[in-house]
Picture 1: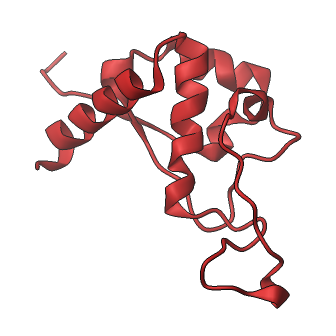
Picture 2 (picture 1 turned 120 degrees about the vertical axis):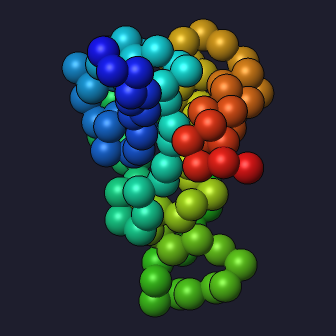
Amino acid sequence: MDGTTIQVTIFPSSLKTAENLAVVKSIPLDRVMVESDAPWCEIRPSHAGFSHIQTKFKALNKEKHDPEMPVKSRNEPFAARQVLEVLSSLHQQPLESIAELIHTNSTRVFGS
């Protein structure tokens, strides 16, 4: 290799199938970053990753908009926590450890 560092971003669509989860689990954690892939790419109940999520967000239909509530089926940046929860579960490591490592990775790539 030429010394190039490759990072992989995990986002909700990465967690749709059992095969996707196996691939995500195989990626070294020091190469992983996360994103929400907002706005329309939530982790749905039909996705394999959904069973690993601990934090569920109450949301309203867009017709009942409330600025204090997320819109149903619209993914928001704060939902990146759910991606962290899936990683935590897959790697059987505490959420805080995964979050700290992801922060370190992101800082290494983008700076502080």
